[in-house]
Length: 101
Image 1 (cartoon, rainbow, N blue to C red):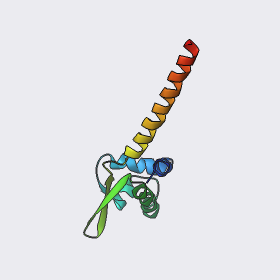
Image 2 (cartoon, one colour):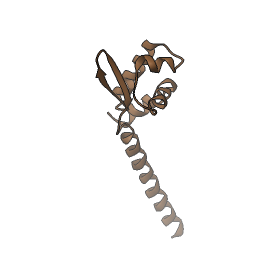
Image 3 (cartoon, helix red, strand yellow):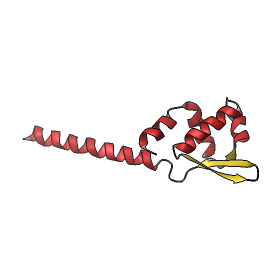
Image 4 (cartoon, rainbow, N blue to C red):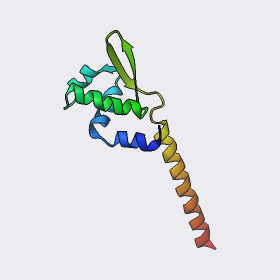
């Protein structure tokens, strides 16, 4: 999974709502659907995208899945921001050096 996949997953407001709900702890699909403006099948589809992006994991308990935030789910996005920011800072430093010469 790459940063593009993570950012694509975060681009949808329903998926961001799911992540906010999961920040309070693991939930089954039905409980998530009760807290969102979409039905259970739509929540299941959104969860599949979040799992594929590495933002959410699930455990099977009997006949249900409990979804939770992935421990390192945001690491890919964080690394992208760090790399991008480092590149910007190096370019800015080079610009300042050029201006002061």
